[in-house]
Image (tube, rainbow, N blue to C red; front, top):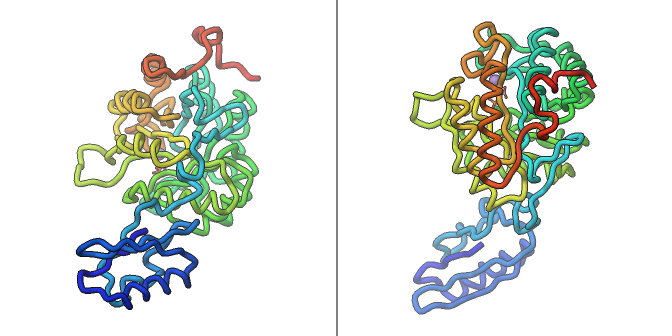
Length: 354
Ligand code: PEP
Ligand code: MN
């Protein structure tokens, strides 16, 4: 952090800044230019300019951060990409992991059929909401614990680990008892008690980006989970709110290379919520893989026209198969791999119980 002094700041003003920094545990590094003096704050934790009161001191013009406001999530803290493991699935390695399944678990038949279909097409994890964050209180809210049980049954039958959303700190133990990975939904990205609660539980976490969150704020949210002791965190870009109304959200694929530079945490892209329209899911999934995403999460429903939520952005199993085939080609082109190993890739070979 750098404190820029006003042109008319006195030596006493500079000493005042130095004293305040010392009180806060930082060492001051003073450089006197011809027109200005700037004071660098050197310390081993990210400074929080809002809480330091420096801008209120006499002679101070402005305070600028030169480092990010997060630490554990940063590349300075850990230069190597992190690998996050869910069973035998690894996020952040050579493989582009594909997670697929319905928006919501609706019935036993629906989740078992979808799980078998996405597994056969090469998905490595199953998604499905049991607690749904719906904009309207009159919309389908999810099957709750019954939905978690059905997800667990689908896992038994297919061997696919399960990711599902948890919406409140109180529900963390229940959801963690069934799920292999906990999803923090976009609307809860800054639910700090929830972030702390998933930080204390020994389950990997997928943290979705808030619809209006900057990348920096998103990484600060991840920092809550890391700081609470859980280093198994993946980030999921799912589109942000912009002035554009043609798509449900604006999928910010810029976030992928930015995150790769700023953080060691693996990056997932959700082209389903990012576009809101099934026809646009595949092109954006391919673009995400090309941009360097470590994983995709895609909504698939056996009968999208009958889905209780997000049918318009859900792929049929057949369309999901097409996506997988093309995404595997893009992955190969960028030096990654995606989908089933060649030997298991024969049509229909995957849909069996383990
Ligand atoms: C979801 O994954 O079904 C979901 C609700 O996503 P988001 O939190 O990104 O809106
Ligand atoms: Mn959804």
